[in-house]
Image (cartoon, rainbow over the protein chains, first blue to last red):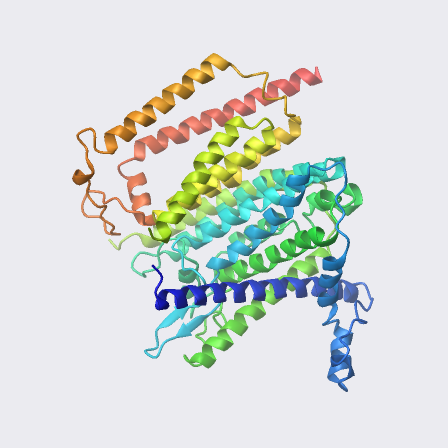
Length: 372
Length: 184
């Protein structure tokens, strides 16, 4: 049944998956630190600068620098969540209360399977995308799986059996459904544009969309309106300010996670940041050219393993900039009121996305018509 | 038995079991959760058939949109464990259940070789992305779905779209009326 070769392949796949989870979780952890540091700088504070590991802190200059940046803070935060006492309030529905954090985290981690984050060059110079699974319908997979993440919030809100979490859960489900439509519609013209007959790019593959942006303008410049609608919908889907209806602290205490503490709250927290990391990566892939250098330019790095390493680094740099952008917006804009969120979604973004789609359908039809 | 068979039995059990538990469970939220499990495992069965597009649509439409609305309504109306009992018409639902199980059994008998269509007559599906002339080759690739939908099945699509539009207009008209009565 299992021969050695198959076992090796299975082991490698599991190893790759674990590495990917490790990378995304680390990025999520450090996004939390980035959030604290950036918010501190924006408000003229210092931010976390005390936590330090015993031996590393005594290295002359580097140790002090790392301590000041708060490099060790996520470690301390994680340990704190882990060792806190697990409190389960008496009035909750225990099964769903325990289930909800898992349901919130799993979709956030599953979407990363189809994310291409670089390319590898074989000896013949062919490029192979670096990703866990190259799916023909990659973008749909991301949309489908991330839409399952709302169950975590809804279940948490409902099972907590108290009014603030409940309101948070209800708001969240309404908001998710409203902005999913605009998000899907904003991506359609992008894929219409990319799948030109004859170029080989076909379907909804994330690899094809990155490759279509090498040596040509990024799709951000070709379709600025689609990018804007997608970005706004992304903010709403990740529950980030100014759209953080489910947990708006000022009117709902803590929203859907009011009754959660300790490690379960930590899981919700990490899931939110994992969503941000994956969302930023997807925006980079679709609109910012993925691992390609700059718009209108071919990659300056050689087609060897060095080049693929630089490519991955470049992709990470873009993604990290977008994560910074998420944080930047959060500490700049005030929160919308709930009716404003619904208004924006249904009466502004959705018609705009439809118009955008119709415009690009007409444009692509006009461009693609065979010469008379 | 290889790993695909194992996965098939696992997800088939989940989907059928989820369906049964959905009908049997007293609490509407539990029923909705079992329905989600059932729908997602049907999507997993599609994946085992390598029909990724269908699987993703199943999750996207049913798992991600329809069931969220279901849960939303259940929670908003706060239907408790007793909530489902009132509207249960036992005779009718029993009849509908018997009818659908009956149809299922007839179909199974027909396809499992008792009728004329035996397993030996089955043709393997041709998997190809090319569309030759007007003939549609059945495959799981995305292009063929699109080609089929916008050539052979154009009229059904238009009719379905029109039906959905009618339903949408109906909802708007109904909800507007209710609001106006309240204001008066």
